[in-house]
Image (cartoon, rainbow, N blue to C red; front, top):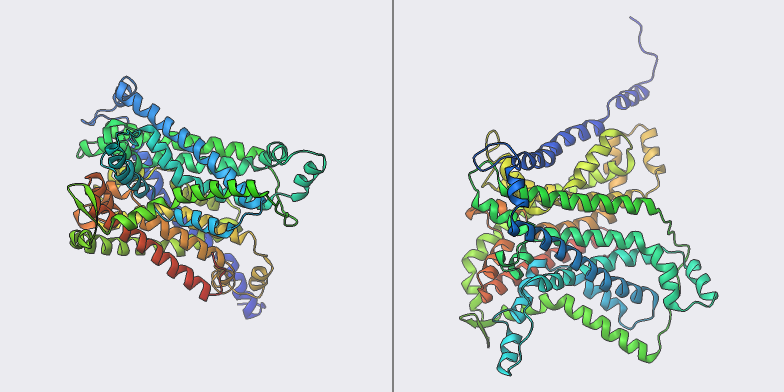
Length: 563
């Protein structure tokens, strides 16, 4: 038999080329994602065509669209979604434009304050506003003694304000990033033609910012219609129903049945979220505006009067943004007697929740930590492959990974119960189902941040390694992963914030043995246990920020840029 005349090294290289480890990895991952993402959604959709007896038909949809209550729920969802989006965009755009185009004292502080405000989850913000403006709120009681009646925070206006206060920093960050990429010569050309700064902004800058504005608006709208905690607290449950709260309430009332109104409501909420996301992304792609920045644009100096007004405006926004952090920190140490807050400082609130805090904090750290590790490692790989490989399987995996980002947490949780509660999985009530839900929901954050950094890395070192016979897997871990470190660090920070504070899916999937800190905080807040809710909320914020700073410090030690 003839011996091969190829040298040993080329033969090994050829064998590596014939075997595609990334292709195998993506194929396996695609199957897993179909089970964890597509299967629950299909199950929810199928159950929406069954009533609570298991009979197939359109009875659920007919009942929904012929009921004034459910139609009001649908209208309410649009009202808070559109209202909070408009308000967040109206606040976020001028905030971003002022800080990026004008000389403002303390600009770094304002950037930091807005970022810190995002560390507080929306439902905690809602609870803090209730502490001040609720039925027994501090300010409400104070002005009532003076014979002054304040408008109620409960209802659509309150929900819109609280959601917008929590979401406008997202618009601010997206628009700020877009402003930094705009070619300054375009704006300068408008100014040299004699146009006022306002005219330059409305006719030149604003059209260039439209893709970023629409992106921010889409994120705010999706977050608002899916936000279960804020609508439940400020909407006072059934007094102002929206799709997210009704999906949960009907699900809990239908436990043990094969479907019904919870599946119908979940399907409609899913269709609304996916439809808005698809429409926005289509419009953004059609715009295709190039914004490559060749140089830094000089900032405009304000007059003394204008600078004072700008400082006043920005300070007010920062106060609103950081309000939940301040209020939680204060109320956690104040004595509360029969829902009446006194000025007596105490640690009784922490003693009252000590037993629940120990168990829920342990659950949160273990469940969030397990999901965090999987998301960081898996997301880094998928982000790298998403940016480097352009084939059908990679495209399908990328779509499946991003799909849960547009799915409300309550819908995903309900889908998990329908899909994995019976044979052959039997996961309902276990810690595993929560970890899987966290991974599926938060994986998109890691994938997108790492993919964005990979697109900025030159392929030459990677290609040189492959040419020298180093396998693709080893090339990734030895060469690409160190170069991806900034994106991995940024993604890890964002993932931790999202995972530890997750509430939407958790509230559907948790049991007595898997209660987390956000769940306990919500339960105390919903039952008007002000002191206990404040203490638990403060622990939630402290742990969130503490681990966030530790991760950031670790990133700096690994020579990663400060975030």
